[in-house]
Image (cartoon, rainbow, N blue to C red; front, side, top):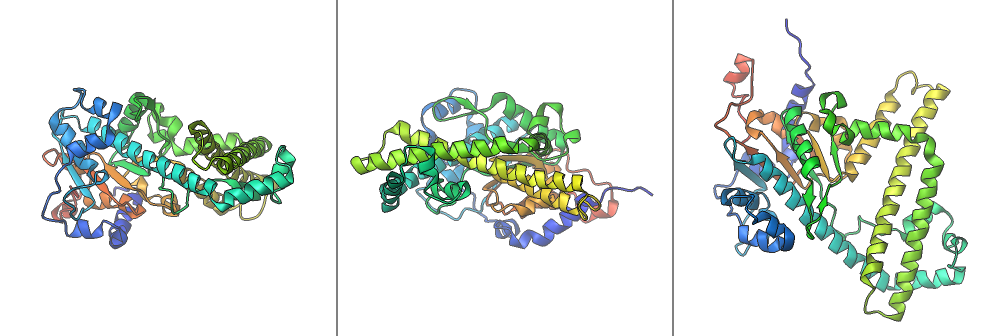
Length: 420
């Protein structure tokens, strides 16, 4: 008899059971008969500047640009509003540049979403700083002697309270979220190929500068290529483990970030009282950067504290941790979910998208992109849809070989059929 790991099969079975909860369930079960047109002109006009020049510079032919526009059509307001199914299929025979278009689409999706997040964050910050809350905060700071650290800390009882009261809250209803994109493929090799290409060529922003987005590769480091190992989730967890004895330094970094942010916010509040017309652009950028730094420092400290509790429990031989390890696994999954929450691009195989810690995410993914979609069986493609994906892009070629299915009875039941 031949044995196999049934984990992937169990995840496929669960994905079929959970399909009805997916925002895309209706579109998958009853896809619309009409095809929404690609708004290439609208997309190019939306991007403008260096990004438009990059797309029109000759590296992409018209069919590739139309495919890109179809993948990003929801970004462009349409003069002919129609029901968008949330599903996009991109067919491309071998050698037509599917990988290039996937990376270009990820670039556009990430850039536009992040730009909108940034603009909404600026608007929210201006609203808060120009309101009564900012004026009251400035008055309290002056009454406390805000010229020094003691004055700032005197506004609240503790550093944690100060962090929560002064930080710009990204979960505010007025602030659009950062991009959240899930990229999958049937095999580790296909996923690693996309990650390697992205690490090598990076993204382009609205000023023409190159940047690398916050990204994670989910999967066993042993199954990943050496070139992508440093962005794997397990590598990041092990990196945290190596920093667990630096708790005091992490607390100091949070305190310093907190003090810098509170000073800038106080300065901005005073300036707006004197001149309600607005703040200098440089100060706005500094304040937003300080808020982002404070959030990162707080999250990093929380993760180190969780990991420190695990290791301390092992050393002390606490029952239920050192013997069973159940609590260890639970907290480790919490740490993984925390890192995934912060990542803006997540790369994994279709099967690994069903790992337990994906279910701990508080926010789903804006977009799912599946490469080599025609080489994956239908239930496997449904697995990442369990992460409350709002939009799905399938890229593949149905004329190439389908998924390999060894079971004759499964083949007779059309198990090899893809979702494409």
